[in-house]
Image (cartoon, rainbow, N blue to C red):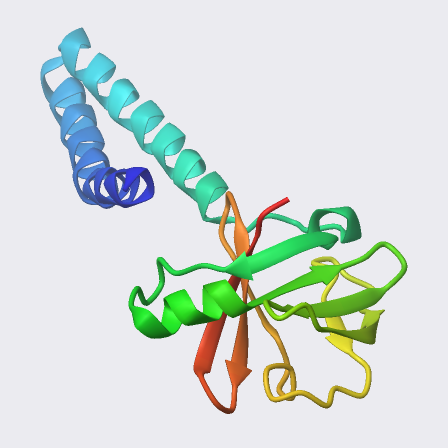
Length: 166
């Protein structure tokens, strides 16, 4: 919500502030009114600040291996409903410090796989020799400025969205 509001302000300033700055400079040089020079200066400063702020928030976070290691659960906020609730209640996974991917099922069973890391950033990982329908495809990482999540394409249940819980 905050990012969308900032983008609207940013778009408005991209369109309005340069026009206001040029108009202020034009009037200043014609009439020599110091008020217009101040308006032009303010428009320029606001434009630069707004642009740099938005650019900062558009950059995705840079993940390290320490950021990724931990437990993950299905996030039911992406597509709420019975399927997402079932996925959340039945599956979770953990990435360990010793390069293991552990897929947990609610019945107590666990499948363990070795993972390999890219040279990063963002320190992507892949599962060596996957043989389960949830992890048979490449895992996709989505990052924003504040958080990240993984999407697994299950051959039985479609996309499964996992977020780190600790």
